[in-house]
Length: 514
Image 1: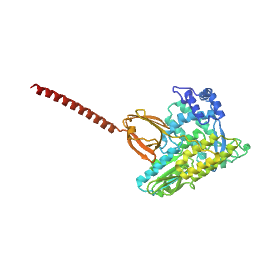
Image 2: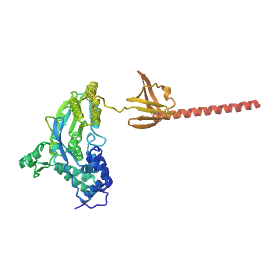
Image 3: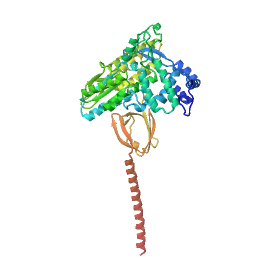
Image 4: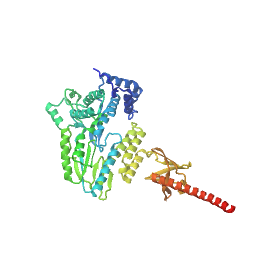
């Protein structure tokens, strides 16, 4: 039985929403044949999806599950069809994400607009600095929480209950709510694992304890009869799973931030941290987190969860950190990351020689990796990785040169400028006279766009080696007021002088007449 359309413009019935969701779904895979076919029939597919919602006949496909090896650990990744990716974008972008966002702590950094790994690392480093500023020492401890099989052990019924609570609070349109509550169980059904070959007692133990995400890897298909399905675990690779990953343990976040009032707490999906003065505080927090986790079917791995000194070297999100006695945060790349990338480059070389991959893919992959990690690497590490790339592929990656151009009010152009902090660096000679009377209108063009400024000033200029370093800044409101006042005073002074001269001439005429 289909759902009738009510007064509201239901999210799922709006063809524009569906079309936009399809456009988003295509962005990361336009090179694939299936995506190109989807694009050719984008409007027709939009109508088909909309009809499926109106009639209530839409059903997601289980998708293609395939194993990968990530840092030595095998795991399944799910690839959804383009239709299901479109629906997932619609569900998450228009309904789920807006419904759960207000219940997330600010230091929850994963899979959210404006956030991500870079955001989380900045916040994490800020927390370390904050601890030192408040306590004046690096004598303290950090708790690094590790979950066992995080995604694989999320129970479906409990998770659906959590999501439904948020949806009922936030979704005003009854029909949008009804369709969402219809969609979510269907999506969770695609997450189920076939456990037909196990006894009821074994399945009960799986629900109560940790399960292997690769449970059915390499198993004879004849044993997967579909008679018994395990309602536990969510797929890695689907967008709903990302939403689930960031919101499901929200009670643990609230316990740490609100109940225990831990300021230095944050979470990136299943990687949590907490900073405190003593080990005892963190042990008490860990016991509380473990209790909350058990209620939600999550398992904290005590063997990998650790409490270490801030002054020692510890690892968080594949970066090695330590807090010095002067308050400086030392950051180093995890050496295993470099080892993996070296092996990957050699594998790329073999694939390239076999004609199974093109050079552009190799270059882009390496540039992406180095661009993400160079700030945590030493000069020697960057040099050695670049040398290995040159040795394997006979050339260096082409980097987009980041230069700036400044155009002054009279049209004077300063090209090919580098930027170091606030300093623009010019290889051509510049002096104070270059800028004198030309800063009323300044246009600065750079890699991130063009911006025009009014009433700038030359802060400083100096020669460093063969280069010329200078800083430009906008005048403050106070400086502008002072300039206006000085100009007004000068004008008044000139007016008084002219008046005085006129009066003197009249006086002389009067005297002369006598």
